Amino acid sequence: MYTLPELPYDYSALGKYISTDIMQLHHSKHHQTYVDKLNAALDTAPELKESPLESMLAAPDALPETVQNAVRNHGGGHYNHSLFWQWMSPDGGGEPTGELADKLTEKYGTYQAFVDEFTAKALGVFGSGWCWLQPDMSIVTTPNQDTPMLLGLDEPLLGLDVWEHAYYLDYKNKRDDYVSSWWNVVNWEFVAGRMK
Ligand code: MN
Image 1: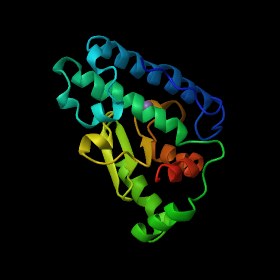
Image 2: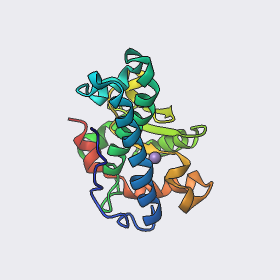
Image 3: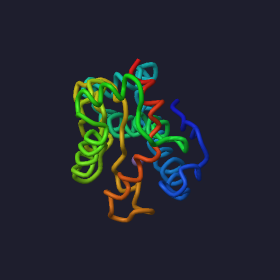
Image 4: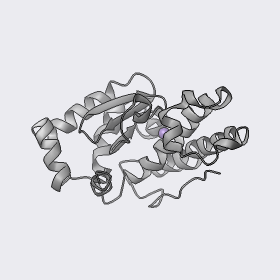
Protein backbone atom coordinates (compact mmCIF):
# COMPACT_ATOMS: atom_id res chain seq x y z
CA MET A 1 0.00 0.00 0.00
CA TYR A 2 1.29 3.40 -0.94
CA THR A 3 0.78 6.21 1.55
CA LEU A 4 0.80 9.99 1.40
CA PRO A 5 4.21 11.18 2.58
CA GLU A 6 4.25 13.95 5.16
CA LEU A 7 5.46 17.32 3.99
CA PRO A 8 8.96 18.12 5.25
CA TYR A 9 7.62 21.55 6.35
CA ASP A 10 4.32 23.19 7.35
CA TYR A 11 1.63 24.00 4.80
CA SER A 12 2.34 27.67 5.47
CA ALA A 13 6.13 27.38 5.19
CA LEU A 14 6.50 28.55 1.60
CA GLY A 15 4.87 31.83 2.57
CA LYS A 16 4.20 34.36 -0.11
CA TYR A 17 5.55 32.13 -2.89
CA ILE A 18 3.07 29.27 -2.54
CA SER A 19 0.18 29.83 -0.17
CA THR A 20 -1.08 27.63 2.65
CA ASP A 21 -4.32 27.07 0.72
CA ILE A 22 -2.51 25.76 -2.34
CA MET A 23 -0.14 23.56 -0.37
CA GLN A 24 -2.98 22.07 1.66
CA LEU A 25 -5.20 21.38 -1.36
CA HIS A 26 -2.34 20.13 -3.50
CA HIS A 27 -0.96 17.76 -0.85
CA SER A 28 -4.00 16.60 1.12
CA LYS A 29 -6.43 16.36 -1.81
CA HIS A 30 -4.63 16.04 -5.14
CA HIS A 31 -1.70 13.92 -3.98
CA GLN A 32 -3.92 11.85 -1.67
CA THR A 33 -6.17 11.07 -4.63
CA TYR A 34 -3.23 9.79 -6.67
CA VAL A 35 -2.25 7.53 -3.77
CA ASP A 36 -5.79 6.24 -3.29
CA LYS A 37 -6.34 5.52 -6.97
CA LEU A 38 -2.94 3.85 -7.35
CA ASN A 39 -3.75 1.58 -4.40
CA ALA A 40 -7.20 0.82 -5.80
CA ALA A 41 -5.68 -0.21 -9.13
CA LEU A 42 -3.05 -2.41 -7.48
CA ASP A 43 -5.78 -4.11 -5.42
CA THR A 44 -6.94 -5.55 -8.72
CA ALA A 45 -3.44 -6.75 -9.65
CA PRO A 46 -1.86 -7.94 -6.37
CA GLU A 47 1.04 -9.54 -8.26
CA LEU A 48 2.36 -6.00 -8.83
CA LYS A 49 2.48 -5.01 -5.19
CA GLU A 50 6.16 -5.89 -4.89
CA SER A 51 7.15 -4.15 -8.15
CA PRO A 52 9.08 -0.92 -7.66
CA LEU A 53 7.01 2.05 -8.78
CA GLU A 54 9.93 3.50 -10.76
CA SER A 55 10.16 0.43 -12.98
CA MET A 56 6.40 0.23 -13.53
CA LEU A 57 6.46 3.90 -14.58
CA ALA A 58 9.27 3.26 -17.06
CA ALA A 59 7.24 0.60 -18.86
CA PRO A 60 3.53 0.75 -18.06
CA ASP A 61 2.83 -1.10 -21.33
CA ALA A 62 4.34 -4.21 -19.76
CA LEU A 63 1.66 -4.20 -17.03
CA PRO A 64 -1.75 -5.86 -17.25
CA GLU A 65 -3.88 -3.72 -19.54
CA THR A 66 -6.47 -3.10 -16.82
CA VAL A 67 -4.00 -1.16 -14.67
CA GLN A 68 -1.76 0.51 -17.28
CA ASN A 69 -3.52 3.86 -17.27
CA ALA A 70 -3.98 3.97 -13.51
CA VAL A 71 -0.32 3.22 -12.82
CA ARG A 72 0.83 5.71 -15.44
CA ASN A 73 -1.44 8.52 -14.22
CA HIS A 74 -1.89 7.92 -10.49
CA GLY A 75 1.43 6.13 -9.95
CA GLY A 76 3.09 8.93 -11.87
CA GLY A 77 1.21 11.48 -9.78
CA HIS A 78 2.38 9.82 -6.57
CA TYR A 79 6.01 9.58 -7.73
CA ASN A 80 6.13 13.14 -9.06
CA HIS A 81 4.50 14.79 -6.07
CA SER A 82 6.51 12.80 -3.50
CA LEU A 83 9.58 14.43 -5.02
CA PHE A 84 7.98 17.81 -5.66
CA TRP A 85 7.49 18.49 -1.95
CA GLN A 86 11.19 17.80 -1.37
CA TRP A 87 12.24 19.97 -4.30
CA MET A 88 10.88 22.93 -2.36
CA SER A 89 11.94 24.33 1.00
CA PRO A 90 11.36 27.45 3.07
CA ASP A 91 15.18 27.66 3.10
CA GLY A 92 15.36 27.24 -0.67
CA GLY A 93 16.11 29.63 -3.48
CA GLY A 94 19.40 31.21 -4.36
CA GLU A 95 21.74 29.38 -6.67
CA PRO A 96 23.12 25.87 -6.63
CA THR A 97 26.76 25.35 -5.65
CA GLY A 98 29.46 22.78 -6.23
CA GLU A 99 29.32 20.17 -8.96
CA LEU A 100 25.73 20.96 -9.89
CA ALA A 101 26.54 24.63 -10.41
CA ASP A 102 29.58 23.69 -12.49
CA LYS A 103 27.60 21.34 -14.72
CA LEU A 104 24.81 23.87 -15.27
CA THR A 105 27.31 26.56 -16.17
CA GLU A 106 29.15 24.21 -18.50
CA LYS A 107 25.91 23.40 -20.34
CA TYR A 108 24.11 26.78 -20.29
CA GLY A 109 26.88 29.34 -19.86
CA THR A 110 25.37 30.94 -16.78
CA TYR A 111 22.95 29.94 -14.04
CA GLN A 112 20.54 32.61 -15.28
CA ALA A 113 20.63 31.17 -18.81
CA PHE A 114 19.62 27.80 -17.36
CA VAL A 115 16.76 29.42 -15.41
CA ASP A 116 15.60 31.20 -18.55
CA GLU A 117 15.56 28.04 -20.62
CA PHE A 118 13.86 25.94 -17.93
CA THR A 119 11.28 28.69 -17.46
CA ALA A 120 10.60 28.93 -21.19
CA LYS A 121 10.08 25.17 -21.43
CA ALA A 122 7.81 25.14 -18.36
CA LEU A 123 5.70 27.92 -19.84
CA GLY A 124 5.60 26.03 -23.13
CA VAL A 125 3.88 22.96 -21.68
CA PHE A 126 0.44 22.92 -23.28
CA GLY A 127 -2.19 22.11 -20.67
CA SER A 128 -1.08 20.03 -17.69
CA GLY A 129 2.37 18.57 -17.21
CA TRP A 130 5.84 18.84 -15.76
CA CYS A 131 9.20 20.35 -16.62
CA TRP A 132 12.34 18.40 -15.63
CA LEU A 133 16.08 18.86 -15.19
CA GLN A 134 17.80 15.58 -16.01
CA PRO A 135 21.13 14.21 -14.73
CA ASP A 136 22.74 15.03 -18.11
CA MET A 137 21.60 18.66 -17.53
CA SER A 138 19.04 18.52 -20.33
CA ILE A 139 15.58 20.00 -19.78
CA VAL A 140 12.57 17.98 -20.89
CA THR A 141 8.82 18.24 -20.41
CA THR A 142 6.11 15.63 -20.10
CA PRO A 143 2.32 15.88 -20.34
CA ASN A 144 -0.05 14.93 -17.51
CA GLN A 145 1.72 12.87 -14.79
CA ASP A 146 4.14 11.18 -17.16
CA THR A 147 7.66 10.82 -15.79
CA PRO A 148 11.00 11.15 -17.59
CA MET A 149 11.41 7.38 -17.16
CA LEU A 150 8.47 6.88 -19.52
CA LEU A 151 10.60 8.61 -22.17
CA GLY A 152 13.41 6.13 -21.48
CA LEU A 153 15.32 8.73 -19.47
CA ASP A 154 16.85 8.59 -16.01
CA GLU A 155 15.02 9.72 -12.90
CA PRO A 156 14.96 13.54 -12.77
CA LEU A 157 17.15 15.77 -10.63
CA LEU A 158 14.46 18.47 -10.39
CA GLY A 159 10.88 18.90 -11.54
CA LEU A 160 8.24 21.59 -11.65
CA ASP A 161 4.51 20.89 -11.57
CA VAL A 162 2.78 23.19 -14.07
CA TRP A 163 -0.74 21.81 -13.63
CA GLU A 164 -3.16 24.65 -12.91
CA HIS A 165 -3.96 23.03 -9.55
CA ALA A 166 -0.39 23.91 -8.52
CA TYR A 167 -0.88 27.64 -8.88
CA TYR A 168 -4.38 28.74 -9.86
CA LEU A 169 -5.53 29.76 -6.36
CA ASP A 170 -2.61 32.16 -6.01
CA TYR A 171 -1.73 33.12 -9.54
CA LYS A 172 -4.92 32.51 -11.55
CA ASN A 173 -3.90 32.00 -15.17
CA LYS A 174 -0.47 33.58 -14.69
CA ARG A 175 1.80 30.56 -14.94
CA ASP A 176 4.77 32.86 -15.58
CA ASP A 177 4.34 34.53 -12.17
CA TYR A 178 4.10 31.12 -10.49
CA VAL A 179 7.27 29.87 -12.17
CA SER A 180 9.26 32.99 -11.32
CA SER A 181 8.13 32.72 -7.67
CA TRP A 182 8.96 29.02 -7.55
CA TRP A 183 12.68 29.62 -8.10
CA ASN A 184 12.68 31.28 -4.64
CA VAL A 185 11.83 28.00 -2.93
CA VAL A 186 13.87 25.46 -4.93
CA ASN A 187 15.79 23.18 -2.57
CA TRP A 188 19.15 23.02 -4.38
CA GLU A 189 20.66 20.89 -1.65
CA PHE A 190 18.13 18.15 -2.33
CA VAL A 191 18.63 18.49 -6.09
CA ALA A 192 22.40 18.18 -5.72
CA GLY A 193 21.96 15.13 -3.49
CA ARG A 194 20.13 13.36 -6.33
CA MET A 195 23.21 13.59 -8.56
CA LYS A 196 24.93 10.87 -6.53
MN1 MN B 1 0.21 18.63 -8.81
